[in-house]
Image (cartoon, rainbow, N blue to C red; front, side, top):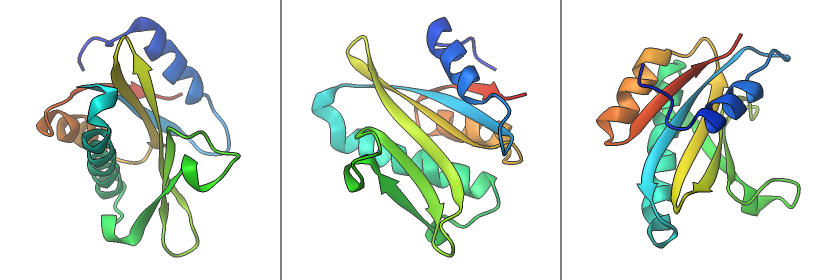
Length: 134
């Protein structure tokens, strides 16, 4: 596992994973993308979401992305991967502008293959920091 890209962001991500109804893990994706590269950020979000779906044993074609701009009660830079049948949670992310570039925090059920997710994100060309929940 790489060193956390930002200690504060790591701690905040870890707090999101605190025990609740389901056990969660996460990954922080350091994109180095600026606001001028939002179409690339959008595609990267979809690509990582597909990796997470596969690592959770769900075909990416069996999911869709529910975005913040679809619902006033949902943040504009917040997205969820849900299953087509029954809208079950697969993953959620928050796109955070930090020091001029985007970091994207994803979280998902802990039974997804954490190592495959981190490796897959790195294969996409981004730095990844895995965060395990409790």
